[in-house]
Amino acid sequence: MPSLDPCSPPGRDAMPLAISLIAPSSFTPEDAIGHGVEGLESLGVRVHRPALLQRRTRYLAGDREWRLTQLHAAHEDPDTQAVWAVRGGFGCAQLAEHIDWARLAQRPKPLIGYSDLTALLHQYHLRGLPAIHGPVVKAAGQLLQAPPEVSAIIRDQFEETLTLIRGPACLDYPLAPWGEAPARLEGPVVGGNLVTLASLTGTPLAFRAPPGALVILEDIGEPYYRLERALWQLVGAGALDEAAAVCLGTFEGCRGVDDTPLEAIIAETLAPRGIPLYHGLPVGHGLHNRPWRYGASGVIEGSRLTIAE
Image 1 (spheres, one colour):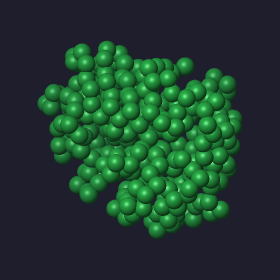
Image 2 (cartoon, helix red, strand yellow):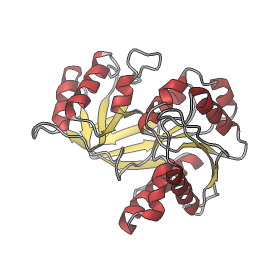
Image 3 (cartoon, one colour):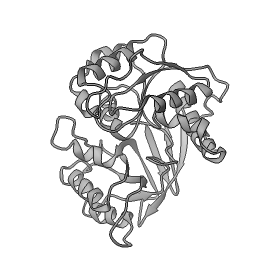
């Protein structure tokens, strides 16, 4: 069971939560949405779902205006405490420059998601709005469908996410240095999906790590050469110039052409900037995807990352 010490946040008997469901990226089959909603409801969450959540356009959940309307409406629902994405995929970057940020600031709620949501999580943070890098609603379907040992892991991740919605919390995460690393590092925790971050380079949404940042990176289904290319793009664009460290989450289904570990490839790319590398963080696609509050203060000591409000 993940450690929540030292903050002692609310337990599972804390006040019930209501969330607004959104589909800001790719289209999701209705049965997958239904299973995800049932999973959240099994945790006592009340899910506010629009009568028509999706209006499929190509591979997207709707055209840009449709998805923007859903996002604004989700924030303005007076009876919910968070805005939770059904899934990632592609589409969030299309929305960011057209969001009415003043409207969102009138009723700030944490946006929850990962993968393609990385583009919006960073923009929320830059504007002082809360954001949580965590499991998407679709994954909650595993709470009722997966074998008990898998369901237990997923349940802990969703319980942690609910804890972060409720208020300040401290969460501990295991990780390990790859090569030499300082005894202690402290800074804001940012980042997300590697290829998504790289795709924003050269656009108004371009990612740049704040001074002293601990940058988390994860991905899925990409061959190592594409991951190296994406990282090279970020490094070459100066996105990591002021980062204190890079922390690797999971890279589900990512493969190389030989036995060179991905960590060695990434360390080689970071070496000219003197950025220490850590790995083994249980964050990303796949079974292990523990949530963390975007931009919160993180401390790395030894084999532990602690993220606090």
